[in-house]
Length: 323
Image (cartoon, rainbow, N blue to C red; front, top):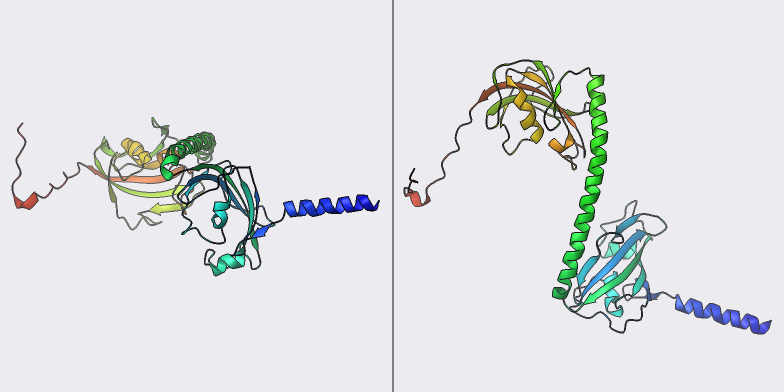
């Protein structure tokens, strides 16, 4: 029994020593799990890696490359920050993994964290994990792999955005249809999906591409939150804006919807997000994927003045092209 107890105690001490964390000069504790590589990272090497930082005791992920594009770094030991995984970067080789713990108080003193808050508390710690995926002799040697990983990440993001957009488009169609039904609107859809409601017909030709239009408008989201307007609630203050149909500077939904308007026409445009401010929106007033409603009045339609001629260089007359 005594021999068995001695063996068990020795085993515990052995395991404890294998899992023991070491400490850097700055106070970062760490543990390396070696993949057996004899070549360690050197000055001017480029490395490809995965990194994750989490608030200790919580599931709050501060940053992570796992499942995303890996990180790339050119090693310059003279410029590597302390109290960071880079402090012991030259102890690692290809395939090595490391766990480490950062002290919030230390990071605040170093001005890496700008003071304490609900997330970064006094005495708190940040748990990190780091994995060396590959080591390259120089940055130039890593360039091809970097470009490959960038292309993969862009393709993933594009596929994700397209999938999200497809779902948002279907949801938007239902929301717009409900809005039209709830408000008993009677209009038509344009070629690309702007819903046009004419409440008062104007006179003369309709606005067309290249024409300058003076407009009064009020824009709001489907829930009625106004984000922009140039007319007061009682319509006493009028200051039309000039827009040129299909010219840069106006959203595509205006260019398409206003072609149904003549001088004096009043109505509404319900614009899907792809013809408005897109997947990003325009925060804080226009959220992502937001369909928009515009109350519109066309005050006048005209031909825009030609652009001013470019100044002649050196004040000298320029040769005219032959017709």
